[in-house]
Image (cartoon, rainbow, N blue to C red; front, side, top):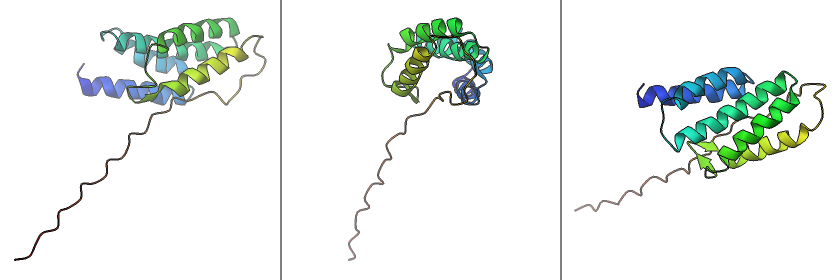
Length: 135
């Protein structure tokens, strides 16, 4: 698998995650996880566990969801605030909030689940054109 295929698979995982297709996100990222070295491996394992945690939430398994969110957070806490274009600070914060909500059985599945947000790259200002002198 070349870098372009890896990026495509990674991005498909984000699309699945944001569409609440947590198992499909897990599957997209798992194939990458099996092939990559550290620190990418730990990062992918962390987001796979977060996705699996929300998959358990959708199935009303609060204990499994809480356990996987905690395991994923432990791995993602090692990442900087932005990693591979992902706003890690926001993802970690959202996962912590959801984990705290899961202290009792899930009666109704909520629709306001977090999404993976990408960090915006600062726009580069175009270089100023030098004025040409007329001779």
